[in-house]
Image (cartoon, rainbow, N blue to C red; front, side):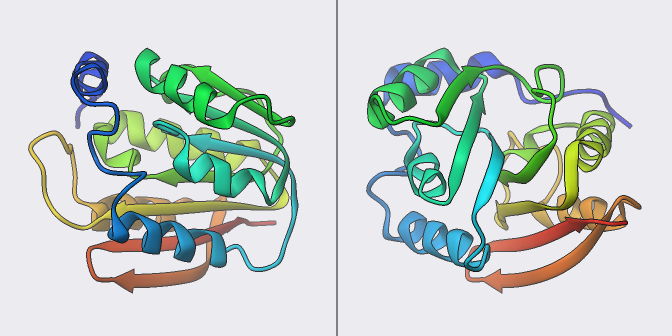
Length: 192
């Protein structure tokens, strides 16, 4: 078991070298994944939402259309600045710099979105994060997780293991699952 994480400074360096290092704003794959992510939420509106690993705010902008108040968190200062610029003066969006799980804002949350972020945590940090997220959801609140199913040296575990750990959390129950070319998506609901 490891309390490790991928070094936050590595992400900051990537954003300093390239404004959109993963092609979030330009990739057809990302556009399709974001569309499926938002569609998986159904037609529900969320009073209070939290996005983990918001990067430059591309998915954040789409989620904001469905949320009254959205807190978006990322550990790379350059990405946070880019997200703030992308989102402009839109009301109801609060982009913050912070690490997971240490800087998780207090809920309760009606929606938590973890897109392409949880596999950067070691086992102990992931388990602590999952417990904290489950506890922070309001009754009937949703946790949507979507992760690339490829492998990378910076990942502490595969997407399948991350999602298995989410689905094993007693405070959550699976509600919707998709396996697409290149990623998996699960929507979980606070149990009880």
